[in-house]
Length: 455
Image (cartoon, rainbow, N blue to C red):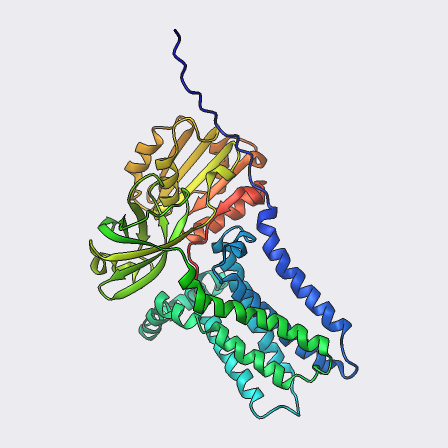
């Protein structure tokens, strides 16, 4: 009698659809245009100067309200942006643009019949919003400084007083605490508009303004008062803290109750108690879902992460919130490239630790690059050896040229339109490779990355 063995059927890899990334941004654009058209259609008779200035201010309130919706932590919101990380990017864009518009409104619009309190509320609102905006973008000064100005700016940034201020400005925990005041500053500006607008003789304009501002503030109150009470969290404790190299650590967390469920490649918001108090950070998960303990990799970038070896020890408690992210190789095509820089290899480790042989796409070229010996190269090589479809390329930029899109495409040996790319690592490297892959013809829907910095 013949013995039948089960046959595993490998899923087809068809690629992603760009529409999943466009719904959210397109909705924001549609709201801005529709709001402007509504105001123009309902515009009261009179001088157009004050009307235009007040329309600009109202559009600023709309965008700031959109920003508050995007960081509400509600699942259905982030799905329209292909992940909470991308929703955070659009939150930042909407909030910055809204703040600029309100600044333009204040600078160009005056009301001779303003109430005694209204201008004061508006000033408090714009000063607070502008401060938070500058604080949010300050740590990214390298990426926003024009190339010709980088050397003089770097000299200024390296001076002792600026470094001292930089430690304060760069504190994620401090910034996060003050960032929670965004809704308060918006409320000041919103009330200023209600008190001093000269176009609210039109009830349609008044109630449209109340609607957009009220929705944003309602989402803000939900986030501050209810979200934490309704969030599904899991209790863990630190089982070990080990250095990976001089600038990175891995932390193992064991469950104290119900285990945390996630998909390979996702990250999680972890509340971790250390010797100096509680810290909340997004951490990439490097373990597989079937493993009992959770493994996160941490690079020393901020005030807390730079001191993890001293501040965190076995036995300390941790609380993990719901998993986040859509960084998933199963959304790719039959020909893929994975590019990891340094600790950016963590999601790929999760993929390889969870997938069975003969399940990966037809061909995967895995580029693992680091300056010096790659910190987890041995583990990566061991896991890669179990998959014939996977071709590993380890690149040491101290002895070899930096990885480029040209090298990636040449190694993949397939038409760019058929290729999917998954990129994770230093922002500058990922930005450059993403840009050049798109220029070479890789479809935008098939270039995948995550923005792990939610600031």
